[in-house]
Every structure is written in structure tokens, then in C-alpha cells.
Amino acid sequence: MNKEHINKVKVLLTEWNPLGKQSVKITDLNNYDTEATDILRHVKKTNTVEQINKIINTVMSQAFGIHLEPFKSKIIAEQIHSILNEK
Image (cartoon, rainbow, N blue to C red):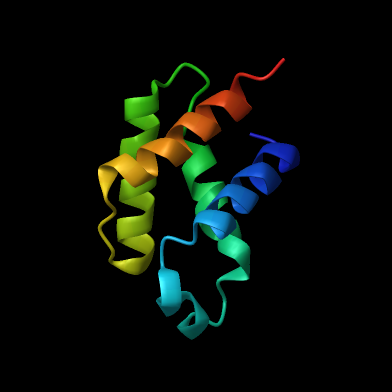
């Protein structure tokens, strides 16, 4: 995990905005910085998209008490997988 990966995942999460309208109520959201860091802390380069998807769902559930639709978070998991496997 490096700063570049964290920034790319922050952008993905911010654009996706899984909290939706609730995001304006979170004063320390900081473009999902903490969540991006937490996701990447648990993800290994060898993880599958399905494993990354589970990690995303766990982090978001623990952080915000929300449950995500797996097909939506899978798109983000695929993008994170690509980011980690870039050359």
C-alpha cells in the first residue's frame, strides 16, 4: 500500500459515494480517506476480486453501519484489483 494507491481508492470511493445523501452528515468523511486506507490495509495483491469485495463490504459496514449491494461494490473491487496489479 502506498500513497498513490490510497489516493486512487479515495477517488473511486468519493465518486461512488456509497453513503449517498448521508455523506453530508459525516463531518470527518474526508473523501473516504480512512476507509480507503482501511481497505488497502487488508487487501493483498494476490486477493481475488471477490475477496476485495468482501473487504470493502466489511470496512463500510464497520465504518458506517451500511450494507452495500454486492454487485455495486464488486465494480469498485474490480477497479481496486486493477490498481494494485498495474505495472
